[in-house]
Length: 246
Image (cartoon, rainbow, N blue to C red; front, side):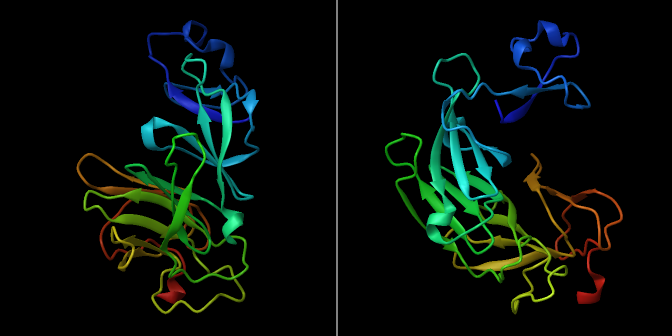
């Protein structure tokens, strides 16, 4: 039981009255009306140290590992908790690393890695990807381990929004003629156009749109960001990191 999820708990109910009380992780410090649930993944492949959890097509839960594996997690006994892990894909098969970004549109899953954003489909719905293709690869990258394409989310405009981690910590960064590193960019639905939305970000684990079409993102502290930040995107805004490159 190595994948943990958060779920809401009614303020009028005690954890012991919760439907999945036996799976509650009481060692986790949780704030607000939530509990941490350890999924009973005792069938198939168990994800180890997942760095990304997200819902995909059909509300199936997916988990990504830093080592490159992407798993689909299935509820095979109908009790409401995922119990089986299937290897959906492994980005290392395509020479890629660090699958920190995950988004889906229809039946297509988009995985953001250090080098490219790759699209995958599971055509026979068996939990394993059958086909894939390069969606966007105009990403400056070196061998530095902290180069990520993260926070993938589709906007109301149909474009894919992606956060590119800064390269200011890299002593030998790759050429970046478009200034994508340290920026949030948006990519057209066909993957052929891209433009910068904001700059001055550091390392964004996630971002999402609200019901009004506002984009919010979380940024990691350090290097000009004195605190962990929750920010609302203002187009062409600068968000504090690495002012020397502005």
